[in-house]
Length: 499
Image 1 (cartoon, one colour):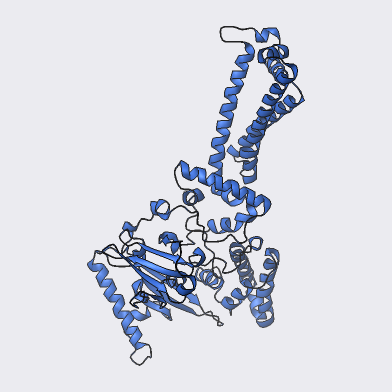
Image 2 (tube, rainbow, N blue to C red):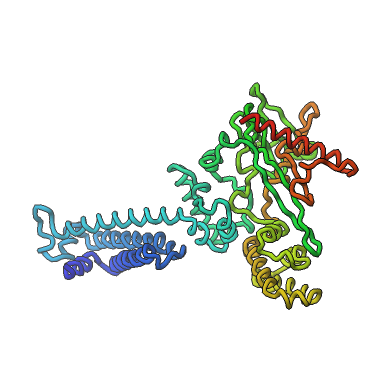
């Protein structure tokens, strides 16, 4: 068997070009088997190994087959022999003798052809499967995608594959994504990409095809209480509380209004923004009950930018624009670590000094790791030497926590710094439309009443539910306190009445 295989390979290799083709196909096939074994057994899971196995090796295999075919065509032209005459010259007579199932050479050619088709089909299938893995998306183009990969792994959607949102379903979506991927490879190879990656990503699949597979508007109902704890820059990092009852209803008549009113099927909202960036709204239109639209124009921007051909209907990602790749604000990041107990709140001025350490000017990540330690430890060495001695272990732990925060949010290679990507889930998003500049033709503004979206039980307060207690009539904020208390309970009673 081996002797016949060697003889067949020699017969196929009609010249140096053919031998090169045989070497490429054979070595590519053997290498693929080895790489595939290491990938399936878990010996290797590196994205670059996958690129070699599923892209480079199949490509070399095909190139080898093309060279073999080309060599035969060239030999035919050079010698003037027909294909059969060339086969008889390259192989022994016993191998070319015809039988009921054809000659031995032809049977071998058919066997190798089927093997090639199987190999290429397997490689293509494995390639598509591998390229759908989050590890490939996040690590194959390491320098470019590292910021997104770092935030993805610590996101609410860390168990959702990248392709579920970025590709979508169907053949058309698959083809579009692969064509886009080819351009991305060219961009990475020749450094044609922007730093940081610009947002918004206009090529995302519609939210109704992605987000609403799990989060569909008819399932949004009721209210949800959220509490936010913020810490002051004083010596004891004094906490303050903001407690909100978020009205998450979709806006159906039976359930009232709410935050998700904008995405209810009955309530279409569309807008145009400056340079199609979705940050500054030129105008907003909302569909009325009779099917007509009422337009609100931004008096500050409309006369400068006029109308726009880039019109977009509001969906999930207009507000949840950082649903997965969430970059933190340094102050809020420190607040969260204090709340979770990852940073020691008992150390004097820990909130202020932690933020100072995070927001220092550092040339690169290596310098930042050193600078964070120098800033934090240096402050306590000069001002609180006793703390440095008694609580050295806590300070060392705080340094490591802050380093992790910095590595997650700041990526010098892509010019991703603090505030590079705004998050529109809060006031920064709402006030794009709900502001005093947005006026209808009759001068009516879009409402920007805070209680449209949430009832307020506390706002930067000393206690978590300050406004639910009876107000102090001597306080200058007594009127506001009374209003918020009344609104909270009225909203609660209305919600209970709808159950």
